[in-house]
Length: 365
View 1 (cartoon, helix red, strand yellow):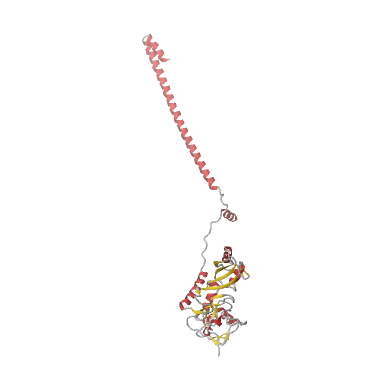
View 2 (spheres, one colour; view 1 turned 135 degrees about the horizontal axis):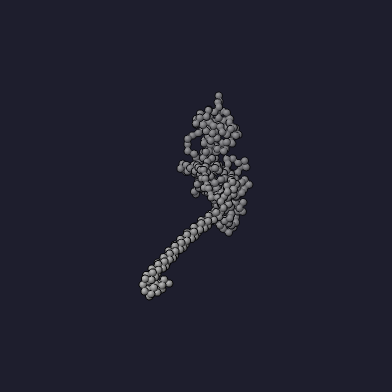
């Protein structure tokens, strides 16, 4: 008798994540399986994406096959995808697929992202849906490096346009890095490093700046390169390389989720500050208030100096007049003293000879 999922505990996880961890499909593909009604938990088919289950207690099936969760290291394979192969398991048009190039022991792998039919280069395949999600989700910003052979002479303006972002029919592309590796008379080799992955994005960007790509190859994905692999060859990544892949993807997520520092406030221009104060009812001081204040203080200083000079001059004049008065008084006293001496002499002369009287009168005059 079937029963519903157990009450959620700390061990419960989203069913789509468990499917991806089991290597059945990528996380996005697992959500499609749930929406299509192909996933059951304890015999009940589920359709809600947020459904959780306990991998130790609940029985999860996909198309009737029980989900096997094993604590084994993920398997990641790098394939040198040749041109004219399609990145899928089955193609209705019967074109060659990337799985035609791999042994049957890799049948449980799924592509990590895609390369279009005419593009060659690095293609990763894995049985770890969580790792696939980390490497392909745009929010993690994992780098992918492409080399494109383009037509014409690539000018500096075209490179700057690519780096700023190109307006496509599905929106403006994110900023990227671009440079010219080699320039010939009729064509050039351009390297472009992206942190996002849209359908045929590199080709559309190059067409938009006037340099269509005649050939395109991905030379690196999250730091994984071909390292001598010939077209159609593959190799398994070492456990240390898989750990590095996860580290690179998680580092990109932390870098994007890091809060931005608040910008320092810039001083307001004088006109903006005056307008803002006027709107708030604050009367702003005139721009020439300080020079006038300085002039006023200077004039006040000069006035005080003038008054001081005037006081000193007045004091000197007063002192001069005082000294003059004292001198006049002295001369008056001297005149009085002479007159008194003359009268005394005249009186004495009356008592003496006529000669003495004449001398006394002369002295008096």
